[in-house]
Image (cartoon, rainbow, N blue to C red; front, side):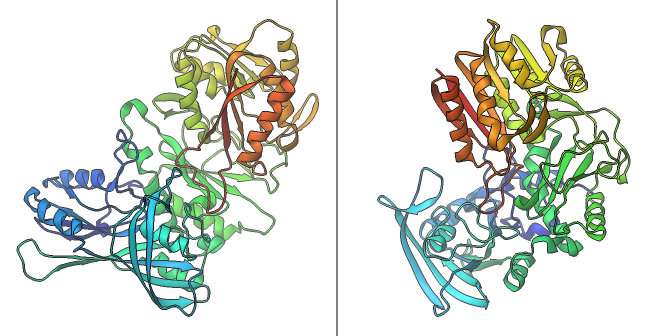
Length: 562
């Protein structure tokens, strides 16, 4: 089984020599966000057609948002483009959607929404001067408590039209991360029908995509939450959606950016609360975040592992995270992190994976951690591009992933500081593995606070530093808690940075929100008597989506000092 197919047969609604019509699933974009990563529906369909020996030409005349499902019509003959384009331009194409919302007035069964919409700086459509007319006709189809299933006819075709108008009129679509709504397994918006004139006259062409099961289920039952683990079909559907969202990483990256390790499931952000699943080449690592409410019964955990085992990977490893985030445990306990896979066959003790073209060595059966934190992939890329010719300090370096990225990027020297000598040895091996001489770099087995105090007394000052401490740890000076101690740690780091130096500051503490983290870093600058020239929030990688109404667990900020 291929977990990341170009196209699934069930997507095809209609195919002849003039039109190809698909029921686009959620999680597949209509247009690639990065031209170098062709992961959109058009690129995937062309690959599918080519593999079947069919002409791969597709004329594109409409788009759907990535998480909107439903009818997309493509032209197979170039000479039909003018006919189809004219119908869209003259608004002769009838588009009917289904949306499940909350907040729609109980005494309002029909309405026509009229707004002037423009796209704001945050990428959201909003009312405002210079907006273009947006007209949507609304009719109630069904109600279930606070949830309402609406039929929408879009008279115009503005960016995010249905999502923005329903939000602006007090009835946001369930599962809409961008505009804010109640949680749902996905965006509950579906393009159900499209009608247009036939190319050479005759009866109009009408293409339909039936309402998706998850939309109807949400209407009946609301957010399923942990109940997704009680029904194999629902669990399989959630895993398929997550896999579609990761197609670009799995199949569409150019060879120079080859990436074989990434997150497949990111907890509630992918509709699977308490579960994270990471891809490491041909293997999966499932992480179960336990809780006091007993989320993970044996039956639920086995059902998840069986579903993951059916995805076609060679083996599945299991990690069970402690109930309390601040609980320090023996990370190599077999009941938490079995050395052998719980499904399928084992990976090599030391497994090579690639991240943005750089090879790293990981160990899937060596405790709760594997040797690399995959959520830092984008930050390692940013560091690599910024490190050329610089002296780089990597605090809490663990196995030195940031140091390897900086060295590959041309850093003159990296200094890696970590309390674990064993982790640093893996860092040396990592530099050797990418073809660099570890003797040109420094590895210091020490407590970061103690090292910083000594470093301040030395003349050497750093051009670029990485500060990524654990949320909780025990150090020689006592217990470190990011929520209360991060400012002091960041201040001490800033004191050993030179003029115009830069700092990549990160935290995974879920109790620290982005706005607070920025304030912490400004407080640190004042404590260090350093002036901040620029502060930039760094978004997490695309495979770490946050749930509706929440922030990503990883907060990362790039600070440039004067």
